[in-house]
Length: 522
Picture (cartoon, rainbow, N blue to C red):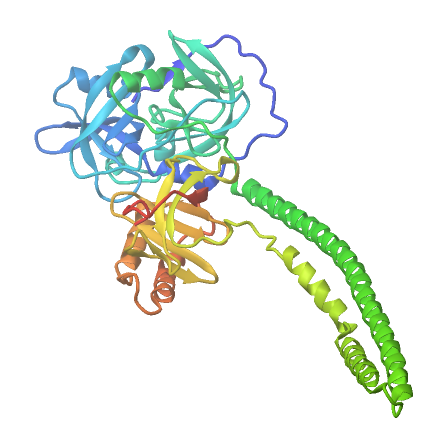
């Protein structure tokens, strides 16, 4: 397929970026799963043979974006067919153009024969500036020739070629808006994606500048300003992501800093609380001492007074004893002496003891012994509504809708989906047949944090993951040791996953009202 070589007499000197964003190879590899070779196929009546080829990428599982010039000949010759060869597997398919825009060199192909389903690429919501790192992914013919591939080899799945460069600006060219970059491309790359550091499409590679072997080489891609209106005009709802491109290292560093700040804040709050409690204890100790000592002194003084009354009354009774006519007075004085003595003894025995000081302190401090934790820190049963925290997430293509689910204390979700429990963590591994992705959902009831790690795997890796998933049936909710059993079962899938996910979505959850039956996390 012809690779357009636009002649340019002069290009401004490119200024090297001071701190370019480094592309994550895992993100580029994940995007490459949806890059295909677009082959024009002819026939002599007996055999089929390739006429030419370009590149393309999946915008939906069955629709592919490429350049108009890649499939132009097929529109003029009804004997030519368009073959779609994926990067992995043996599921080549045939397609037909359903939309063409030669003005801005875009074409939309739909798979019409075969069961091929492709992982769709995500479009970047916008280029934040010049000089960012970009990667071109596609099938350059010169690489095929250098590897000694025969013409028939392009019918077989081959991994696409990836090259890196930098954005050099946006400028209109040949009546449409283009992105200028330095990621090397060649004939056969036409129609392939130009990706940002997170593997999101920023343009469709189209042509290059003729350097005559002496000047710096620059290349052009159809920009989002052309691609997005083209897709909307053809009623294609593309997946677009405008969130900042952050690495997992950046997230991990930020998370460590956040946890350190939380620990520091907790230590400060604990120290302040302890100082406040100590101040209150000291005050309560002083107040208790004053109250108890005052009560003791009052009781002792009253006892001494009654004792003196008893002695005085006793003395009077003793003096009246035996005297004629004083018997009644003696009885009264004796009664008073006896009662005063009993009262003195009672006051002395019931006076507050020194141990009552500690009892009063503990009683006073009981009103201040409240929990310092968040009242929402421990999640009981109920329905939770979880909202994405972009500052703690890395999203390259996943949807970021709110997540709602019913959580039970035994790890049962929505009344029927059991979560596994291993190493102090609740998790559920999701492996579906519809998507080339393994998702690991995790929930922390203590902090009410829900997290999804997404691994965007190739076909061979997905085949292994699906096989591992097929080896066990998750236990039902309510069974004895169901959480532990599932945690052990899921270990086989976890061992097949890369060390780090492609995406990490972190949500903060709050109660959303009474439990309702849902299936969001099943």
